[in-house]
Amino acid sequence: MSERTIEDLESLAVRSQAGDEAAHRALLAASLAVLRVYVPRRLARWGVSDLATAEDAIQEALFAVHQKRHTYRPGSPFGAWLMTIARYKVVDQLRRAGRQRTEEMHEEPAAPVFSDPATRMDLERVLAELPERARRALALVKLEGWSGAEAAAELGMTETSLKVTVHRALQRLRAKWEGER
Image 1 (cartoon, rainbow, N blue to C red):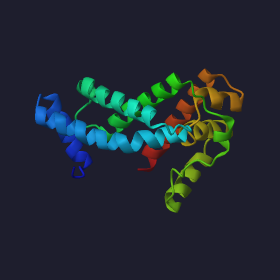
Image 2: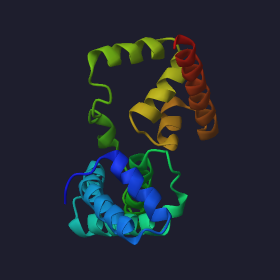
Image 3: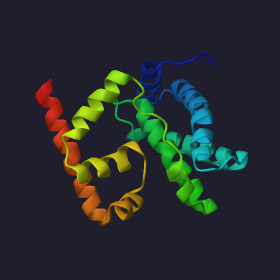
């Protein structure tokens, strides 16, 4: 299969929604190729390397793409839509397997989200303007990938309070970003 661009996938998704069977088959084939790379890596982050578990999640995600293609909004990023489906299917597989994130996983360094030094400095500068509690909550949830329950326990907050804190921090950052543009 030739490598497809994001624009190709978005075009295929729109044509698939319109009933083009060839586009739908091509969309599923392209999605399968992406899922075969993404899902095993995502499961491996949780310590699951079982190929059967990965294949189950891949097939469930592919079926969801087929079944829920009407929910894709033309003009929005297809890759984000596909990855959202895949993430949910991975979580479903982890729940079925009874897996829980261990404390050791918190000790492993997170993959650098912003490896470009200039981008990293910009991020640190903007985050430094937030109050300490909001900065820490935002970093745990959005940058380090902790669950709401884990981050709330770490910060001594309720999950609801954590969600409000993160939401307000994001609003403040968004307002600052839009003011600088």
